[in-house]
Length: 378
Image (tube, rainbow, N blue to C red):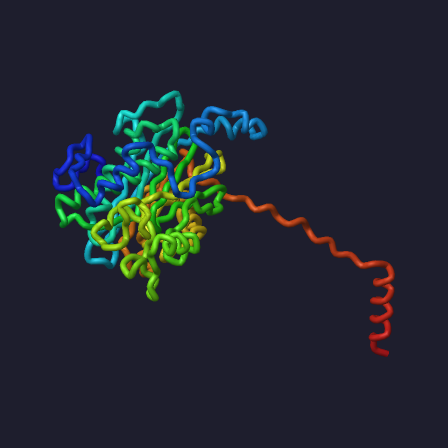
């Protein structure tokens, strides 16, 4: 989608979201707006990016080429309505946050980039709203880029609140969306996920999942839902409404979101971060319509082969979507690929097994000779 998109219905300027008096989101905003957010989600254990980016003492045992690795970012994206009547997905690619949002480097060298896929339900409005405002909230957060994880969690919740208030002004906007984002800062990749989109990293051709699908059959999610008073019905739907357990929006659905942020449906993202190395080739982020018909390793294998053919991430995204349609995916389809190298993925050379030496002992040779002699015709 174009980055120069207008806000939904022109209800907010391109620089801010106007908050209106809304009792639905008021308590929720008080919880997270008056003080910095302390995330209740599962964060990665690498600590803040401030230490990860500037303290290289922990990497003293790592090869110098790994420490000096600088990703060369190239990205592509593709969407298709698929076999649905309406398109409810959105995706965004921002290869340079400095240019688009005037983000200060704050002493961090390398790229600042943002990518996201948003899978809407009940309409397109939540997905479009989130794709426009979430990167804006992150880039303007007071903790960004020193404490990226804290800024991301806070911004997901701010986006949820802002959309609730937009819906209070116009009920036709009522809808929800899952959200998966990837930030690349220097050589650090941070993936944040709310819902059932998925991010997969290709490292030397092997698929590493950078997110967890927030589905009702996930044990951790099921325990949280029960503790909040929610339930999963026999059809596998949260409170009989949704087949995801985390989402932005859906404030209009009774009993799903609590004004204290403790309802069965939450917008809190789950984060995972990793230091990129020369072995990291590309990241695939896609909506669940992609993963309904692809295993993670299968998608990496296909994308890798296509990039070796033409090294074009946009064409590669289209080819993944076309293959998903060929495999009869029934959902809207959106995928973004972020390449970390300027060259295509290299061919993987597999070591040949050592030759097997075949020999026979002297005793065995004598037995064989005796057998042949006994078997010879008279």
